[in-house]
Image 1: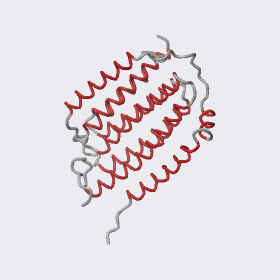
Image 2: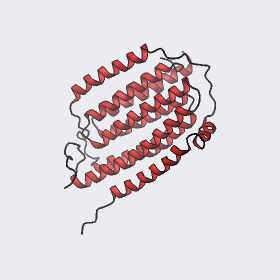
Image 3: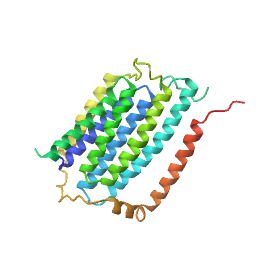
Image 4: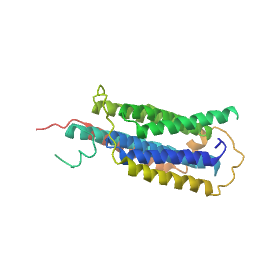
Amino acid sequence: MSPNELTSYLIIGAILFVLGLFTVLTRRNAISVLMGVELILNSANVNYVAFSHFGSGNADGQIYAIFVIMLAAAEAAVGLAIVLAIYQLFHTIDVEAAETLKE
Amino acid sequence: MSLSTAVFYLVALITVVSAGMVAFSRNIIYSAFSLLGTFMGVAGLYVFLGADFVAAVQLLIYVGGILVLILFAVMLTHRITDVQVTNRAAGRIPALILIGALIYLLIETIKVTPWAKAKELTYAPTTASIGDSFLSAYLLPFELASLVLLGAMIGAVVLSRKEIKE
């Protein structure tokens, strides 16, 4: 583990991915599930930027990371709007309680 | 151990510990605020990787945008004065076994794989080359991204408006 090794960044990315997956799998709160998705996207971004730095040397990996950040912002906006709509309809955001598509 | 190595360990520790808080905390407010530490730690990792522009974008969009959005959603959907468990979790034991096996597999793979030796590392500003790429090689994805953002904005407005019942 040192700042000059690719493997240390990959290991941090793997830990972030696994923790995000755990959050998505176990949480019953829709907002927490979205937080887990954000952790997973961040882990992918760490890998992209690490490979860009230690590999080719050009900025392609960083551009992919910026596109991922852009899609994460769009996902958060739409996802949280859906969560608020579910809350207005069911008065809870427990993903097990909200299992029908309409009233 | 040099100063930069110490700072790297600190940043990595903050990232991993606050991600763990997101995954294991019993209160959703603590989870949301721990996400701040994770996003800041990842931005620090980008600085170590010489990606100055991505680090700034990470701070602006994740910390300034997505995190505030998540906190708003938490506070709109919970009575935050309630101190009882707001962050229910189910099926933790099978999930722990699964992610334990997965992290073991990932770390062993990372260790075994013969990665190419790092070249002479350079730290130069990346913003100019990123801008050049956006307007040359990545022009079509760049324009499509603006359409995606427009669609997401309209979709969020349509989804979260008050339904007018007649």
